[in-house]
Length: 234
Image 1: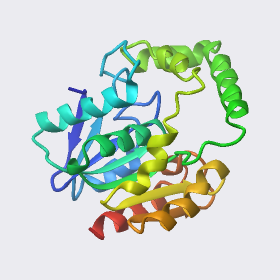
Image 2 (image 1 turned 60 degrees about the vertical axis):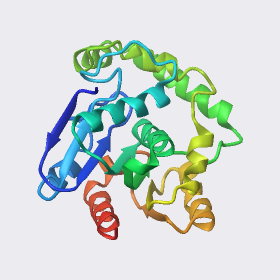
Image 3 (image 1 turned 30 degrees about the horizontal axis):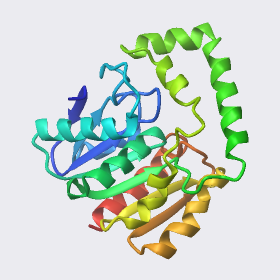
């Protein structure tokens, strides 16, 4: 069972945080806004915050099972599921494994199609993360934030096959409503805006200007309004 913060009353919304964040530190604007009319559930993913683990071998599948156990513990049957980046990948895996527990799915910060220059992109990401590991101030901050060794996720990402492209591509198979929010600055992510709706009319698309990978952080008011309109259509 994941360490989880719960606030508000009403239909449940689960916010699944980005990598190296926690349930309390991510989606702050959105959680505060929705807590007035909904039950807002914010778990720490395994290995993050106070959800302790040293096992990332089957991270996405295990994280989906963690979330299921947590919802069962909270006696919550079905949820509006919202995730960004790593959190969106976990949310997608959960939706594939337990579709009956999902009312709607809202994702952002994901790449629907493996880019042709993926190896180049991956190499740049790994180099950037290695540089961060050398930053003592950065390391101290995350040492205090996470009770598990957060560096395991840096090592996890060094495998060029870590990204679950097949899961992300198969979002088009979902029968419940899906919202794909993307920042205009991320070309490899905006590709999904043209691919998803052509295959499945259940998928709604929102391209947000002046935003990149973390739309919910960069344009929180716009992101929240889009999310609210989407949820209310169900």
